Image 1 (spheres, rainbow, N blue to C red):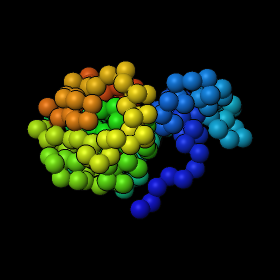
Image 2: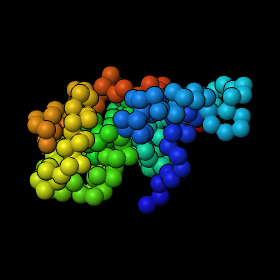
Image 3: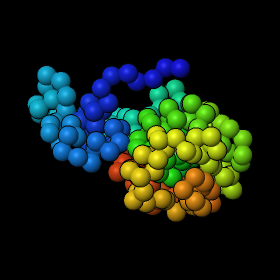
Image 4: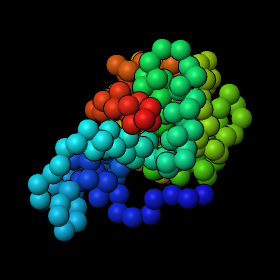
Length: 207
C-alpha cells in the first residue's frame, strides 16, 4: 500500500498549522513548527501568493494530510460525500472521522493518526467483537470498538493509555471503559477540531 515516507513535520510547516502527526512531540518545544514557523524548502520564508486556487488546494492538502489519506482515497471519500444529504463538506469530514484509525485515535488509544493506523494494521482492535485490521474501515453508529483482549496487557498500550488519558473524546463517541468505546452518532462539524474551511475543498473539486 502506498504511503507518505518523507519527514512528516514538513507537512505541518507547509500548512502553517499543527496537524499533530508526531503525537506527543507536537505538544512540546521540539515541535518543528514551533522552532521553524515557516514553510520548508529554499523559498519557505519568501513572499506567499494567496490565490483562490491556492487557498482551495491548501485546504484540501491540510485535510488529507491530517487524516493520513492519499489523493485517490480522498477523491473516493469526496464522491461518497456528494451522494449524501446535506452539505458536502460536512459529509466529507464525517466520513473521514468514521475511519477506524481515526476512531482509535479519537478514543485515546494512539498518540497520532499514523500510530493508530499502524496499530490497526497489526490487528490490535475489534469491531463488534471481530478483529479488523483495515485502517480505512468506516465505522457505523452503534458499533463497539475495543482493544483486543490479548493486547490490553502490553506495555505499549499501558504507555499510550497513560499519555492520552486527558485527551477529550468527541461527542459522537462514547468511551465505556479504558479498553472499549462505542460510536453513538455521526460526527458533526462542531465535533471536529480541524481548523479548515471545508467549503474550499468543495469549490476545488467542483471545478
